[in-house]
Length: 243
Image (cartoon, one colour):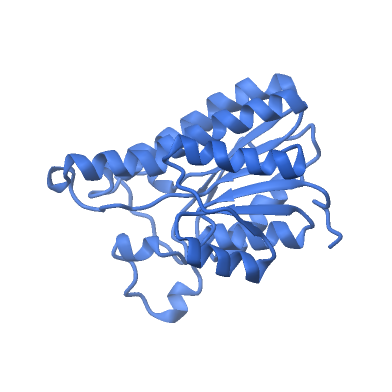
């Protein structure tokens, strides 16, 4: 396939459903060779087969899994041009007082620690290459405040600040870091957030996976000397009433 990202090597996490599938699909259509990773091996292989990506089952919270994924990519391709840290989970959306310690640790691990583990490994490669783009998917929960979202919001705010600092570290080496901050999307997170009961017409106007994929691709397609530091994306159908 010939596209504007032809020859680029990309890795997308959380790629068995939702935004991860949409991002992978658009990157493939733009010509990139896309490695897709997620915990659900059966679903991952099904989606990778459909969109033309290369599945590599892994858990972003496990350092050894990250090492195995990067080893596979570098062995096959010798480089990494794009890392999209999309994997995340609501775990439990509830008042902080009603969450267990295990649920708190789990949410921080999948939504923040996993991102940092991937960024560390990708940054080492991209600094050595003198090029590359890291796109971290956060959430508007990072910049607004709602009840029941304390732990999830803290993790996503951490992703935003991690990306800002990483940008300053990569910039002198010709590599880039961008934080995309989407709001309500057509993903399984809507169920965890109690937003699945809206009518089909309303749901059709929230952020669709391929729409976010198009935004990610456009960020990666910028001239090498330009970068989008961060971008907040709202669907007009959503009325935001934050703190």
